[in-house]
Length: 85
Image 1 (tube, rainbow, N blue to C red):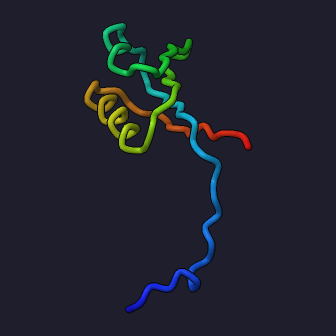
Image 2 (image 1 turned 45 degrees about the vertical axis):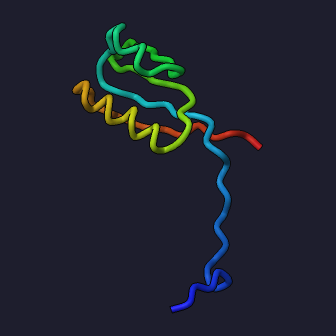
């Protein structure tokens, strides 16, 4: 079978991702801060923690999510921050 790109609808380009906000249940210990590098960690009054920052690609995002899982944290949400055009 021959692939013809003209037979497929054009993909709408989304705005590029500039970073992520990841919400986890529980506060993070100081020793965890070093592993995340350029990601800022903010403990919330409700007991959750927000990790915000630039993560270069989805492979790196998966690495962060797996590390959070390995720490036994519950990931509540992951939100992409898009660049404005």
